Length: 262
Image (cartoon, rainbow, N blue to C red; front, side, top):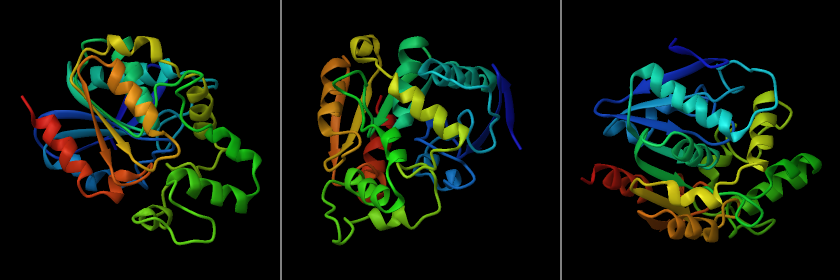
């Protein structure tokens, strides 16, 4: 099993696909044992590095607390281990937050950036406070999760298109993530301190900001701010919520088209 001894971690990663290198940074709780990295559409055009972030999956768990800087530095250290100097990066949800921090902390390591359903943070542009789900009873937590996952959902009504694919899959990387695990606690605490709003102008690479029109976790206004503040960014809005990538079949082709542009 491929592991990288980097920083304070024994970091588990997998390479899938063939072609030029690309770093994929997953969302909260992205355990590669459950998220099918071998089936990711990005693999069709790239040799993609997928990895378990600190405290998750098969990566080791150093002592808490962790900061967004830790996650960004972990990503840079993995690039060093792989010998990848400058590569495109795709970051989804929490992974998008990591990607932004990687861009401002390690300029020159990213050639292109895709930011999916994510937020720049701070007091005005943070994603929904997922840590507060821990205070709810299981039934209320489940309903709240669906409401913020896709704002079209009404309690007792049918699931919005595509959401059933997510909620019936065995995967831990959504807002219903078990919050008692160290990896979950670390991510939830780190995202509370996430704030790159005043540094977005430092991201000087072509950037595609992808948003779900019905996302209650990373609202569209947050993606609009990213597009306004990142100098060379453009916004694509898809028909879905926080998991628009599996709701709208146009999402991955749009990412791949952007990544292929000269």
